[in-house]
Image (cartoon, rainbow, N blue to C red; front, side):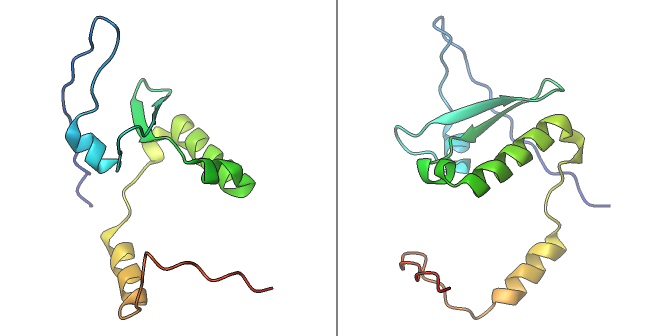
Length: 113
């Protein structure tokens, strides 16, 4: 049986004005920069999830937007079904792209019909 994923727990204080600071470890985990926004999602079981707010380009894509809405709804309705990606699947994915050069800064080619 797979080991359960560890949960990162960091206490934070809520000020008199209802504000708090997102801890540095969480900002790093979410790749948050200055002026980035976060979204709080309340799940049916009382769990609250914080996520980086989607960028405008993702919000404008109707297919991605609908898929993300589906995922958010499914996670809220069935939080017990959320599982980590198996290590075997990650290893398989890495094996499939082994030796393939990737330049994350290169422009993507135009789609050809």
